[in-house]
Length: 88
Length: 239
Length: 201
Image (tube, rainbow over all chains, first blue to last red; front, side, top):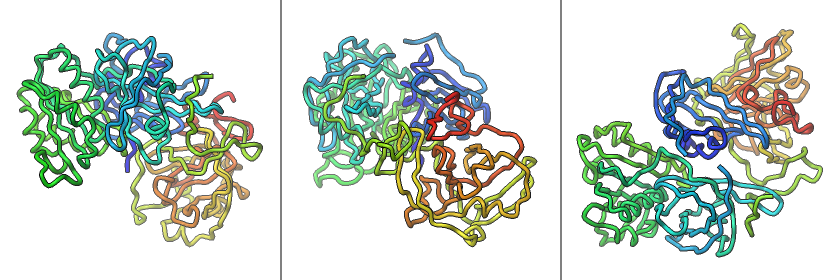
């Protein structure tokens, strides 16, 4: 059974990091080239961090770890992140 | 996005498992139908738990509403549905998410498909459609296990009008005189209640992960462009 | 402190009170944390390999061969970096000492690699001398897939993200290679008794 949610569930966590609405940003998967909105990526929220995976090939696109005072973000699984003008 | 304090103003049982909390949230910035909030509970020893809940109310509502379905071995939903009472407080932040959102200015037809508690953000959309006088046509297909599990049943029936339709399908058991649909949402029901791809409807699908994937796949099979289908997964238990 | 919600208790837990590392609380259930889908591997296709850093296999067992290795029943406390601890958990597994017995290596580091791509890195010394197992039984039953079955690494003296689920092998090397979580903020070593949760702790 896959416990994945989607990028909508991760949006609150990303709201602290990004000035734009992450759910509407588009990613191009560095592994398979699939392009879609972050809101449509598979989100694993029950981890020591948040992992977003490609809906098409399941490769890890993004990892976010947060401590009380720091956050780490790895975007190597994303070839490019495309953002419209920042939305409140 | 900072944490705001929400105070319970009213609790409204919806079904045996679901409760709507009507909240007062000073400094609430407003929201768009489909968005959600993160809710955070703090115990008196400092332990915290956090979950996301779709906003059940339309933007024009005087109070922010969340409808929570109790998951038996859950950590947050049993508190919100059985313990939280008028005057109790918790924190929330939001509104979150611009992806799974419908705005009233858009005239394209809209197909809403909700499984179980997935109907919550769709109710906000349907209420906003009614409150805004939108010219779009909006059809809701709502799936639930039994009649008793249909959240907002009477309220949504009352919203039916020239441009709003509500269809309920029961998947596990139905009364012998049930006039609605039976069985899982499938391509036939979606085609019947939706629009042909040429009409370029917006499709919003929300509910447990398996439900969302099945329905989204069926919509794509029917010829709808993937870019016109927006989904929100609630996880295997549809929390 | 944020506003307290009257009557909220959360999952059953007790403060550690000296029994557990700093910042931990004890739970009765067994939370499932995962970075990806639960893999579905047929036991016919499963193997466990020990490889060197060029990828050459130094040792390999299929499932039946692996089960035929001498195994131990152990009882240990486990500590997750997300602050829950479980005391007295019972496992059945093959000691990593057994797995590496007969493997000739001067390597100082090991990376555990897993179905689905997860990795975690450790000093080789931390998986020897009775400190680590490849476990396939939990509380008298087969290890469930959501908890890492058919087999997971078990290294109880470090935070539980090092006890890699769905382990498929150990790669020995001279260089330390930060794994899935270690490369994005989690502590490279992860000693719960020194509360080494994140980089720089």
